[in-house]
Amino acid sequence: MLRVLADENIANLDDYLLCHQVELIKMAGRAIDRRSLITHQPDALFIRSVTQVTQENLGDLSNTPLKFIGSATIGIDHIDTKYLADHHINFANASGCSKHSVAQYVITAILHAHQSPKTNLRLGIIGLGNIGNTLARYAKRLGWQVFGFDPFLATDSINNASLDEILDCDVISIHTPLTKTGSHPTYQMLNAQTLAKIRPKALLINSARGEIIDESALLAAINQKQLSVVLDVFPNEPFISQQLLYALKLATPHIAGYTLEGKIRGTDMIYQAFCQTFNLPILQHFLALLPPNPYHFSMLLNHQNQQPLAWFYDIQADFEALKAAACPHILGNQFDMLRKNYHLRREWIFDEQQFNF
Image (cartoon, rainbow, N blue to C red; front, side, top):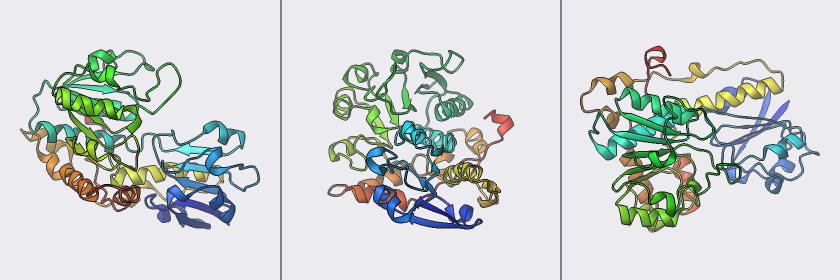
């Protein structure tokens, strides 16, 4: 019988794995380390971004039965891929699983901040992977002007601007991975120098990784340029600076991708890779686990002032919950509990052919 050690917060994992002859052991993701591998001797790990897959955290894997690690996340900055390759461990992540969830979160934040935004609103997107590209398509359907910057992609109708041009937009949304090396590192790419180029009273949204923005420079820019800032991620997560929190337009506890569809889709993607690794049949399917959904993108398009999103997702309520947890200050376990107990939103239903997603 295969033994799987898993983050306890991975959605619907029982529905997927207990279809097979699998012993499933769950624990807090931050607690998965070398000791837990020695104790439980798993054949596979199912994790999220809070588990560090590194030599420092997991140690030497050569004397363990571990053959597969699946991360139910888009990003892989918590994964040392060379370390896994050296130990011949199969790895899969859930690239694109929450692209609609995060894009819809950003649209909601924009509509909340602008109430009834002008149709010629200029949206600048930094990073045009799965999420950035999906956001661009939603924005174009809403009649907004879209400008994109991604130095790793060819110029096209979306990847059509320089970074300086992005920084001059009404709204700037960040969708890059966190990198510290290479030709275009993103660690603190928004620093005092780049933040100085943002137009006064612009809206800045970060739902990617907290360390992409220099926190002290951001606080200065908020005060000096009257920026409105929405953060779903933070530089020292799960800890949040009180000074930063109360300077923000909106803040949420790293839940931009937390829709029912996004979470189950992430589990589904790594489940399929797990089955492939161990030559197991696919016995569970994504669509079979979804209840009926009342939310339709066409409602937003057909409503003159674009306010149905308030019915879809009350983002202000999430901000109030975070502030309540932060009184008098937020601790790491409080942040994690907000994520663990989060009531999953639903993605908007859309016609794939009509909206060309």
